[in-house]
Length: 70
Figure 1 (cartoon, one colour):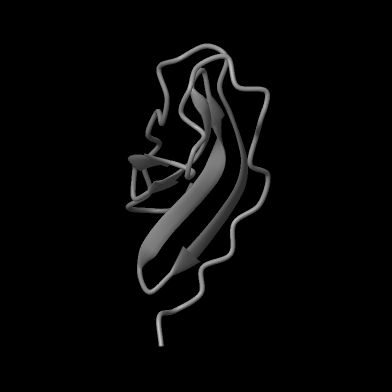
Figure 2 (cartoon, rainbow, N blue to C red):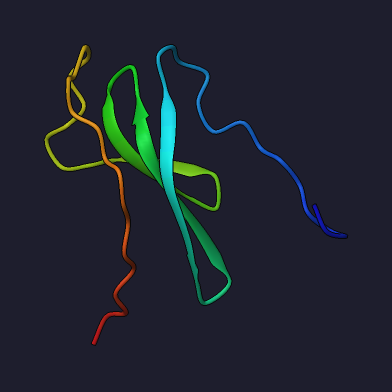
């Protein structure tokens, strides 16, 4: 990693995994899932996808695209 880089644990749940990462306007977005379902993290803050948080979800998110608001 380059100077000023850091590693941050995103989820404490098992199972959990990440699949995609992108950045926009200085923010970093990571997509994946944890025990409760598919979600994304923006700068380390987790958000579940609409209707996903229910436990034992068989859904995952594998890609993320950030579209600026118009």
